Image 1 (cartoon, rainbow, N blue to C red):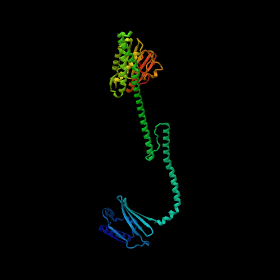
Image 2: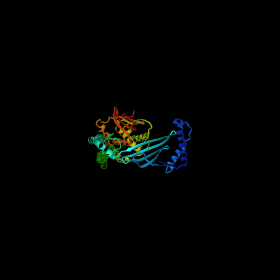
Image 3: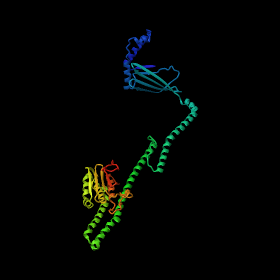
Image 4: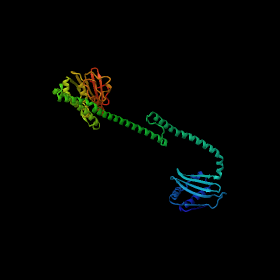
Length: 445
C-alpha cells in the first residue's frame, strides 16, 4: 500500500518513531526494556490533530491507497462511514462484498486513562439464497407456533374485552329491573373504549339520579303549590260561606229588626267578629301564595316579636281571666320577621282560644326554641296526626277555620324550623325548634 502524510510535523514524528523502533529491533530490546527507556513519543499531538481533522476538515492528514491484495478473495467496497461517539471515541464502518457474501467491519478507536483502545468487529451478512431453505424447513413449526400464540392471545383479549361488557350488560339489566340508578364501580379501568363506555354510563347514571332528585323536588314543590291552591279554592268556595252567611243573617235581622236581632248593640260586635274571621282567613290565604319568593332575612330579636304578639290578645285574656307566665331569654337570629310573627301569633291565638278559663299560659323562649303551654282538654287522638293539614279543627264550640297550624307548619318549613304540637298531662304544648340540632323532646320548661 502507499501511504501519504500531508502534515509535516506528523511526517517528522513518523520518521522519528520508525527510527526508534528500528533501533530497538537492531539492539534486540524486548518490550519490557523498551517501555523503561525514556523515549519521547508525542501521541498527544496526534490525538489533537485527528480530532481537528474529524471535526473541522473533510479529509484526514493521512491518505492510504491499496496497491496489491495478498488475499485470494477480491473485496469490493460498498460504503464507508465515520462516527464520533463522545469526546474520545471514533467508530469507522466499512461495508463490502466478495461477490457471494456481504461484510461489514466496525473499527473503534478510543482513549481512556492514557491508553489507546482499538476494537475491531467483522460481521458477515448472509444472502437470501442461503436463508431461504432454512426458513422453508422451519415454516411448518413457525405456523403452528404462530397459531398457538394467536389462540392464547385471543383468549386473553376476549376475556379482557367480554368480561367488562358482560358486567355492563348485567348492571344495565339490574337497573332496568329494580329502577335503582346506581353507578357500577370498577367495571373497566384504563383509557380504552370499554373504560370510556363504563365512565360514560356512570356519568349517565349520576346525571339521571341528579335529574330524578330535581324532579322529586319539583314534584314536592308542585304538590305544595297545588295544596295551597286547594286551600284557596276550598276557603273561597266553602269555608268563607259560613262566616259570610252568618254575617248576612245578622245584618238582615238587624235591618228588619226581627226578634232578638233588633238589639243591634248586642249583635254588632258579633258581626264584627265574623268579619274579622273572614279577614284573617283571606289574609292568611293570600299571604301563603306569595310569601315563599318574598322572604326578607334580617337580624331579629325574637322576644320583641313575642311581646308584640301578646298585645293583640289582651282583651281575650281579660275576658277568659287568663294569665301568662313566661321565662324569656334574649334570642337574636337572622330570619324573616313577618313570617316568624305569623307563626308565633297563630300559636298564641290557639293557646288563648282553647285554654280553660281562669288558667295560666306558660311561654318559654331560649336559643333552642319556643314552647307555649295551655291548660285544656287536649286534642283528640284521631285528630292529632292531621293537625297540620288545612281545614282540620277540633270539634268544640271554639272551632276555628282550620288554617292556623297549617300556616305555622308551612312558614316553619320555609324558615328551616321544626314544629311540634302534642298533648301533655294537663293540656297541650306547642314547640318551635329554631336549630337543626334540636331534638323532638321539646324545650325544657
